[in-house]
Length: 478
Image 1 (cartoon, rainbow, N blue to C red):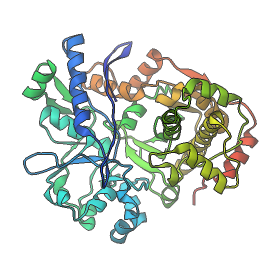
Image 2: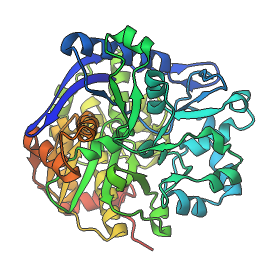
Image 3: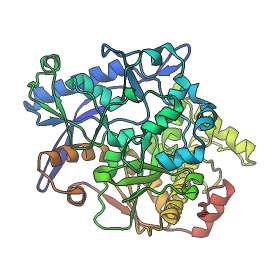
């Protein structure tokens, strides 16, 4: 996790990292949890360093991952550390939810991709618990951190739209859906929109950080992907995006949700973006497979430097072994190289024979997933794609960018790597009147950030054959 200070205005957009702090999940006897207090202390430490380095800060904005939440009691006290979305408690819970609201109806209301860890399923898993019975307020992770900074309570819309309890058509919580699922509507605070004022710093925060109490906190697009998409440097229509990090979020920006049976069958989601736009996308497991592989090798004392491994992977045999990145066996933390080998064995493939071949397998498989997802998104929405913008940490991986261009048959513009932080800063700057509309924000990113373009090459038929091997050909609309 990182705290960054940004400057934005006419012809200016830059970031400086002032603090970096770990985000280590904690395994308890019965669950996997986030150490949210350590995360909050990291936020305070980052604000303190910003104050010492720059003096005054005009505004603060917080974004994070989606779906996870904290519960507060009637006194406003946190009821335990939030569960981690990779915890196993939601396994098989979907069927219980669908008994009350069938899956197709749930999709028509929320437009949300089925993921076992969506907030609606986490709450179903918590049903009957003493913790949930005591809860009076539910705050998504960035809303919780904002609450501790300001004392205010609110639910930022882009993150709320990932819960499975938000009506994609009205842009607000669905009280009717909550009622049918036995979920207390009173837990959920009013919706905030990106750019809304969230308050100013509480006295103890000002004392801790050295910032004045008058320092404003602004609601940004608090789902990190929504912030990243806001900073996609597209200068014209017909673009797709891949926000690539631990997850790859691949899709399109639309003006209205697509909640057809075909889009549900293809497991596409409709999450809110900036200015009422919709992020029509699929979650792909992403570079999680690579980071867990590197961690496993490092723990075993094996060399796990990504750059030389990627250079060797570029010279490895193409399509020697492939996996579906979204196979459930890859979700939990653990020995990823062994799981990849097991997947290959059960699908009749020779497992990768060394670490570089494993890296090649992961990156080619991700490129194939990007290909299938974007082609299906185009078909389901009736959209033509001319260029793919790959943003986030994955944009630094030249091999992944080139493989994505080759797999999709489309040019890939890579960067910025810090799209989420830039989108966060831009929303704050826009609230201050320093930048213009969404198009101007994106033109500013394109003018000021280092981007690299990759042209497609190679044999498209080979990619089609590889996709067919692991069932990643795009789905056709019903």
